[in-house]
Length: 118
Image 1: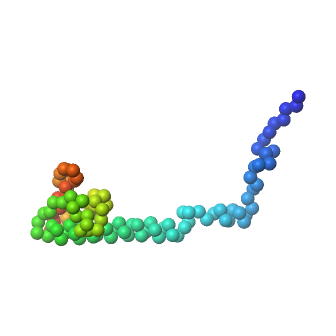
Image 2: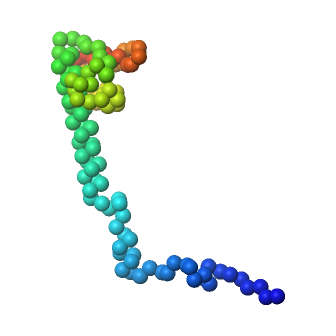
């Protein structure tokens, strides 16, 4: 009885080595796609635009003092979803210096208090 040792090199199903032409074709990956970078930049610009729109709305509403609001009640006014407002308001707390934004209370949704600081 003869025993033979089988190695991957003996296997005819092993993928052939790539030629230099094949390697060039495989070097173009999704991360090199300039469209993705543009989309990422567009998303970032969109978020910045949304932040600016929300901040402008809050400045206007708090012009005469302070304002209390729930995201779901101003969503239509700023053309954003309540979820977007919730995420953006947290960013605005740290980035807008002329508004004091604080989480005021929670009854079925967060109530925010906004006041002009200047």
